[in-house]
Image (cartoon, rainbow, N blue to C red; front, side, top):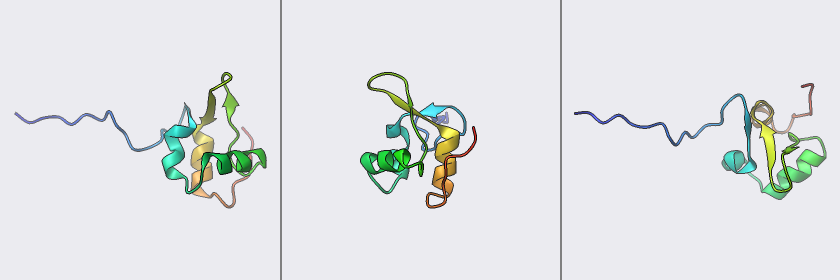
Length: 77
């Protein structure tokens, strides 16, 4: 019998939905603090606070940022 491989560990970010920083940090060449500074300056996606210890980011905006990090600007939603 042939074993079917499970897709339980997908190495990509979904196009829709929201993710924590830890879900996409492996795609970034800099630290969480640098991402926070860029976000504050409007040069990276801003997080949405879901509580005192949870910030989520829209996957659509993360994909836009990763496609062109130097040219990213906060756009219309």
